[in-house]
Amino acid sequence: MSSWAFRVMLPTAIICALLLAAASSASAAFTEIAQTTHSSKASAVGSAVVFSRYDASTRRFRLVVVARDGVPRVLPIPSRTAPFDVDAGTDSDGHAVAVYSRCTREPEWRNAQFQGETINYNRASGCDLYMARLTSGPERRLANLSMGSASEFLPTISKGRVAFARRYTSRRGAAGVNPKIYLGSVGSTLVRLVRAGAQNGASSATRPISMDLSGRQLALVWSRETDSCRKSSGGDNSLNQPVATTAYLTTPGAAPRQMSTACTWDQEGKMSIAGIAWAGGRVIFATQHVVGDGQFGSTVTTIDSASRESSTRELLSTGDAFLRYLTTTNTGIVVTTTMTHGRDPVRTTISETPFLAP
Image (cartoon, rainbow, N blue to C red):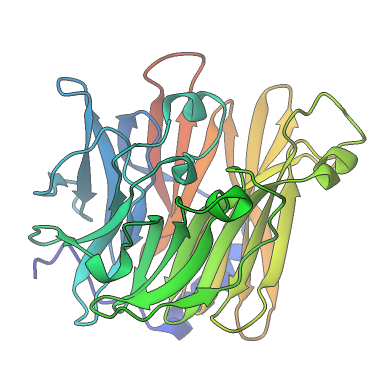
């Protein structure tokens, strides 16, 4: 295994200490990892960061890995016409891998990036799950976790276990629109249902927008349309689609534990929870806020999964850019921001701040 793809993880106790120290910092300093056009989900394992890069000559996306040395490398797997819903993690042998979907009908992604939204893979169809090693490839279809009568997307992997969303496209009504979350393993056909957030009727807006697995514990952000957001915004009826995003911690057979929620344009200025990730036994998630006329900022919250102790600090002032995704390396927090200004293509920046902020 090459040195850039997967470095030894810091001991849990050290990461926890770094997180606690960072929580008291007033601001975070970021180092740019990469810039690309169009919105792209980034995910990390060890010190390697994986994301989609758009190739204007082919109008397709390639999956790229950036090492700690900053040199990008294109994974030797086929491209696709939409950004990858990629997650980086480890297989049962400890190898660094990427998991993602491939769909016969891709999700609509261009409008989402202009509206400050994450790509809605629940609106795609015919999606199956795939996995590839970061050191070599090639990819393999996870046939045991992919059903012909359903569409699977937004996978996350940890030590060979895979959590993913599944929509039963052959079913009628809400059952064929609203996705469910399952936990399985590479090479096994056994999957277990994981309880997630509430579902309001048949709406493709009801979906996970970010998931990260650690062992059997799944941290996720769940999105759904709800009138409670309209109320929290002071009764503004101009909100056509009031959406709540909620951070949960859950395991198979247990009720999901709600950690935080945000409504579009609520009275406290919270806009959405943009991403969630694990780091040393703690869950980290970012919340985007409205701080002025067309100006955004964000906070990061760290919660100990055992003691439930939490802390929140300022993360990033994004100006007029949208905070899209959050992930963690073995030394820091990686965020993806997108600036539109009505342009196509948009500009996406992937950057990292250390757990122990200066």
